[in-house]
Length: 509
Image (cartoon, rainbow, N blue to C red):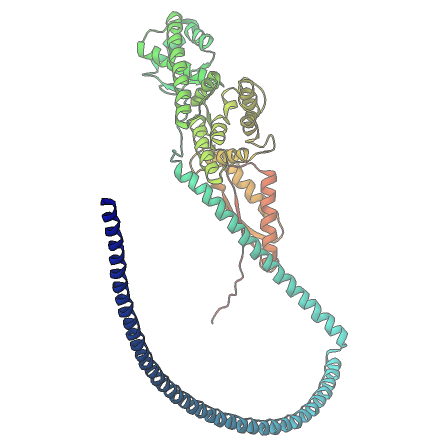
């Protein structure tokens, strides 16, 4: 029974659920259809409204575009009208210009005829005048042309000489300017004294009585001194002074210190001379070593052989024309280094070669030959590089310079030696050089007067203007300079100035 009731209840529940669902779903479907119909109706109404609005907007836009098109068309018609007006005006202007050109062409044709007639008349007149001139001059036109061509040729030669002179002067000025710039920088940066101390060979004594004590009994003291030092001791009538003579500057310096020590001590005899000589030798050796070390330190040249340093130190007691050779070597090293720096070449090599270039002067009294070659041989034997050796042997032209550094050492040596006051010469050699300069210049044709000036560094040559022209003056200056180079020896350079002057003199009476 329970099963039957359960089954009946299940059937009844199912039927009730189906009924309720049917009634509910049908109601929803009905409402959905109504809503859809209302939405469609509203959409149709809205679409109709939008359609009307779009039509109105399109009509407004068409009207606006039509108005703009009409305005633009009016403006274009206005522009076309203005353009037509300008074209008409230009056409009228062209027509007037064409008429004017026709008139001018007619005038030109008439003028051309007149010109042709005048040209023919002129040719006839020139021919007549030419025949008259030939009759008056006594020469034909070809002869006159030859004379004229000769004159033109002379003028062209003169102008060519002037142009050559101008070009050479300009090129020389540019080269001199560059060279002066480099040399000037080098000289300005090397602030060395122009004059150097020189080693003297005169020793002052307290009184002339001391001369007898120096000589000693039967000359034993002076003989012992000369044998010990290897120098000559000259005692003459010079008041309160004795003279030391030797080709070896170091030996002479040892003798000077020995003699001064003996004079200060007062005891002069062979044993004392030997003792003082030993002390003086040590003092000078120490001075030589210190001078060499100081020179190497000042120039920053490192790695030199000890014998080279010692030889450099010996140059402290060597002079050349009154110029201390060691100070000269230092100056050459500085100058060569500065110029090498300006030119962008090996500065260290140039400074090293400049310092060692006069090595041979320390031993040239012991070895025969030019000091340049002696110094080069010494440097080569003591392990210096072949480029350094070449700079040393080439600095006086004994060997042709093959490197830039060798040329720089030559230039630096000349600069140091030719500075005003750097060297002293005897008055005799100085006068002879001036006389030789004047003699060479006076030997040329057309030279009126010659003056050697600036201590022989400039020579002024006055020429006769009726015999020497301006172009000839250039050639004369070059010839004189070439003769000076070939026949004379001089420090630095000699400036040759040729002066040509014309004067007109009259008197009012």
